[in-house]
Length: 379
Ligand SMILES: Cc1ncc(COP(=O)(O)O)c(C=O)c1O
Image 1 (cartoon, rainbow, N blue to C red):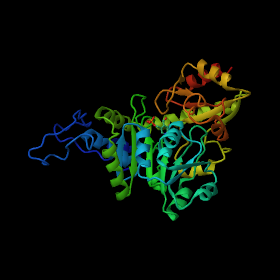
Image 2 (image 1 turned 180 degrees about the horizontal axis):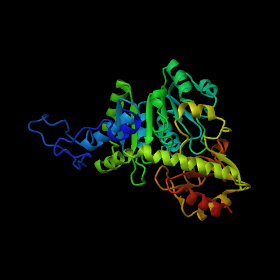
Image 3 (image 1 turned 120 degrees about the horizontal axis):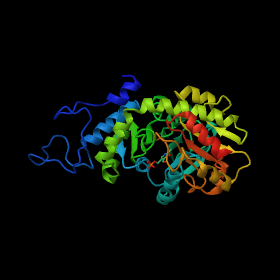
Image 4 (image 1 turned 135 degrees about the vertical axis):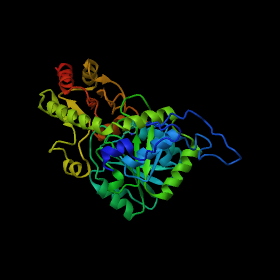
């Protein structure tokens, strides 16, 4: 199956009861048994649920993986990955990453004696320099949030494989329509499916996809043992969202291109961050590993500061000022006070997340309306 067919049919079976085309929402916690241990494959919904099962198979299919796992949120999915590690282990992570991932790493897992190193990964040497016998995991977010750096997954995966280190990629910003990390050598793909996968700003859900049998077994164990699973209704909504992923992403990318070009030509803008520009420092890698450039765009207005940036996002009308991204509606965010507020100012600014930065998640409205909205907010 090609990708656009996988989004609709990948891993799906015809429902046995009535031939329902969409998997029913199996809103049940438990399943009847004819004798202890004798059942139809499901015994308790933390462990397995048919609606979640359908979603997990779809996730595996669209990410070119063997196994999919769904969680109650993106952070719950990341939490499960870090639980593969033991006290004393070390992780090397992108320094420009979602603030919540940073918070989970530093405020929750450092207490359990797992050490995190944060570095820019544009140059693979910076990763090599941090590797030591305790390194167990490399955490890559690409494109990075919110600076849109593109990290070379293939090169990092070569390093990881040669040192027997796991490579996990947060593929939330790209979605598998644009980038499929398992095909590039990653061991684990993670999604905040809350974003482009579900696509309609109506669900919080996380996903992991892997190929390796042993990693899958360990993650399924953690999923069941820790219990951070998603419910059947949210599984259904995400599965429904995935069915239109390819058509939504096509429009998202077209609109983001137009908006990035508009912003670059606007005299009130100092810098636009979008990996589709030939001048973007990682343009070559983006061309190689991504099928398109995505719907996320960040920019710095000329001579702006914290207050001016806040005023601009407040003035927007079609772009909604909100946390999150990846829905059909366009959103604007001020990372310094919102998504990245949990990262200390000094560290945040080192990776480029200055007080004047504004991040856009470009939706699928008419691009003329989006551009007019930016025009009135910026002038
Ligand atoms: C790149 C990235 N990873 C992970 C997460 C966490 O996902 P969730 O909010 O579904 O827990 C987010 C949320 O914004 C994100 O943007």
